[in-house]
Structure formats: structure tokens, C-alpha cells
Image (cartoon, rainbow, N blue to C red):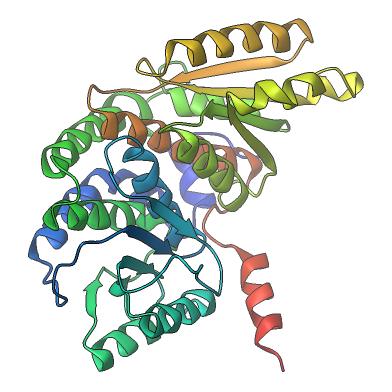
Length: 354
């Protein structure tokens, strides 16, 4: 197993994912610039629905936008990870199609459906067939930089659509919120997450050490922060190559809380991570406090991670950024290069066989 020092990190992280993590605040700033320069090719309509279609790392950005705008958006924001779009997609729908590679088969299928339904389309990728289709069909296309694992392009895949929605007049204040977010992420990187910082003062290193050889159960509030739990679970899978589960409050208080009774013999192998925020509903905060105490009485280790920043967007991003670094350091502790996703690659090859 690896150790969390510079020499070991360099030996294990052959794809230099650390550089991508450290560059994330700058990616968010660059995303704002790309969005401001983007040209919208369709005429404005009275949109009734905003729909995102994408998979994996290309979809989590959509979930972030949906979570962030839970109260602000006056029209539904829906995220789909399928080949087909629902019947609510019609000529009054705004459809964002995201595929980092531009070749995700489900997203390409959704592109054709959105076209056939007469929806207004904005496509985002680093190239691939999605760009070819959009250029051919004169569809609004926003190109983002190549060379990243899709899950490392979250800044582009969330901030760009958020700022486009602002440009279209569907939300307000996105630009200032992004600037505040970049500032908070930069401070987190410098003061709490950087590999030069020792384990005692590095929150991500400290928590990663607690998660090694454990099954991680992640909880968050459902409003605004469900995306943080989803992202953390996904990053533990892809970066750390480790299974985890996630659930949200208050729903887990109506079912999963009862399950914290068995199998007791396995509880020593569990760690619960609660993602918390000072702005959550007071009843949710109380539910989390009571649930924390119930779980601790079962002898299960429980860790709380609190968001940083004042603006809601920065608080969401701060929990995501901390979780990304935890998953990275956990991969190093397991002695695993965090970047490759061999089983996804294998699956795609098998699916391509006729």
C-alpha cells in the first residue's frame, strides 16, 4: 500500500491526476470565460423545461446545476442518463447534451431524439461525433479542452451550462457565484488539500486514512447537496476503485436508518461520512444529529465534512473538491493509479462487438 508522500504519489499516479485536481479552480475560471464567449444559434423561446442528457462524468455536472438551482429555477430541470428522452421534451424544451468525448452512444441517441422533437439544443464536448453532428445541423456547440478524464472536466460540464442559463435569462447572478467559488476552491487547495500539507492539517489525507479498507456510507441533505454524495460515491469507485453507497436526508430516515442494526459483525468495517452545510434546513440538521448518534451507538466510525464558503455554489463545490481529493489520496493508499478505468474500457469493447 502507498504512503501519502510526494515520492510515492509520483510513483503511483502515472497519469498525473494530481495536476488536474490542483488545476481545478483554474478550470472553473476558464469555464466561465468559455460560457461568456459562447454564441447561441437558436432563437429564444418561452421554455417550459430544461433537460440535460449525459452519462457518467458528463452527467454529474448537470446534477450539480439541477441541485444548485433547486429553488431558483422557475421551470423544471431534469437530468436523464438514457438512450431515449421522455415525452416532456418538445419544441418548448431546452436540451443540453453533454459527452466529454463526443462519442457516448446514449447521448448521441438522445441528440437525434431532441432534434426530432424540435427542442432547442446546446451540445458540449471536446470533439467527436457530437461535434460533427452539431456542426452539420447548425446546432449550438460549445467545445471544451481535450485530454481530460471526463470526471475531471466537472468545472466545464457544470459552470458552462449554468452560465448559459444565466445568459438566456433563466437564472441570475451566476457569474459572481462562479468567481466566489473559484476563490474558495483556491483557498481550499492551498490551505487544506495540497499534497505538501501533512496528514494532520490536510483534511483529505486524514479522512482517506480513515477510509482505507472500509466500506464507506455517504449521507447528505437531498436539497442542494445530493450531487455531492453522488459525486463522492462515483469518485471513490473510479479513482479509488472502491465500492461505497450513498443516501440522502430526510428520505433515509424513513427506511435506511432501521437497517443500522444488522449485520453487526460487519459494522467494524464500515465508515459513515456525513456531508454537512450550515445553510441546510434546521429539521434536516436535527435529523442528521440524531442519526449520527444512533449510528455511533452501533460502534460505527462517523466522520462529518462541513462545506466551506458563503455562496451556495461555493459550498456545493467545496464538498465536491474535498471528496475528489479524498478519493485521490485513498487510491494512493491502495497503491492504485487513480486515472485508469479498465472495467469501463473493457465494457465498451464488449458492447462494440456485434
